Length: 458
Ligand code: SAH
Ligand code: SF4
Ligand code: F3S
Image (tube, protein in one colour):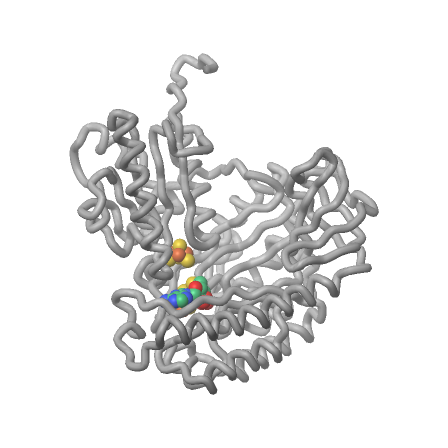
């Protein structure tokens, strides 16, 4: 260990992340918060001083996974003579709170998504066995203010959380309860974070929010005026030196405004990819879900986005088997998928979540019906994904090099359409933008020949 006079000995930190990109971002920030306390990341929970499970509550399976994982950690804690501290963070922590400690007493700390900046204080309290082991207050602004101002990015692509929480209350969804009310960070705060990342070689940022296009952050202090929209933010960030690519996820159809759509056509850094969850193609089901849009409203948005950016790759989320979904409703979902043609889509069986209105609705469907519908939809979506990838064969496309492949000389990166791309290259290209001529495509990736390095890594 290096010997600065007040350096603390390194302690092993293991973080397991479940759920969405927001949790991936949060886990990174948890690492940043704990670094000054001498915690350094380790690859496995065995022997770690602190294990953080960053949890997801979105479907029943995700939640149950947490308890089986905690059971395994308890054994490791016993083997360590009780030296391991176990913290449960994220959305299950928010939803279940102290119930987690009751169900698994080996858990030392429980902290919700808006409380992880308090982790150092909570660890100190736990080690003295005094005070609360639970923090589930909502104060998103306080959290962002308290987080370290600099980050250690893992590579040339980084997530930046710009908006959190949700006020939409879709009837199936726990997010408004686990993440709290919609809140946006200020433009100044976001710009400072993106500048810091750019200075450390980040080329691509993905702006995150549960409803990222509902963004309404305070305008820059020097400019004043009304809150900014996501379109304004994207245009502004695209001017930061080094930032070549901007993405955002996840959006809601109701917040897809004209300026954001226009930015897809007129802002070079805006990547041709849009994840716009639709959930269902049936107006009756969309209404029961409280989505606030019809299938045709969604089709209209897609048409306008395609007009602004004809090559845009479209992504979505579907839920099959929502209570009361008939064969005809499901067929409307299949038809919407056929009409749009997705580059990639995520589909889930409806899962009844405690405390959400849909749980109390009539017409819950059997697992068999849900399974059959999911299989039919996923088969269509797999064909669409393969077809989209194959449509890239023969094209030369810019690839941001994000990592080394398994064998020497193999590199991989991501296309503007968020596909994984494999090619023969060298490690010196890590972090650079290169042109690759695409020669082959499969369901999950593209491969091709390196044509040229566009720019060297910063
Ligand atoms: N904010 C995003 C989605 C967040 S949750 C949006 O508005 O669409 C991610 C996805 O999980 C959702 O799009 C939905 O498809 C799925 N999901 C949410 N709750 C679910 C539930 N109870 N059962 C099955 N899937 C669910
Ligand atoms: Fe959940 Fe709906 Fe909010 Fe998305 S918009 S996070 S699905 S409540
Ligand atoms: Fe899961 Fe929470 Fe994200 S419930 S999907 S981790 S916002």
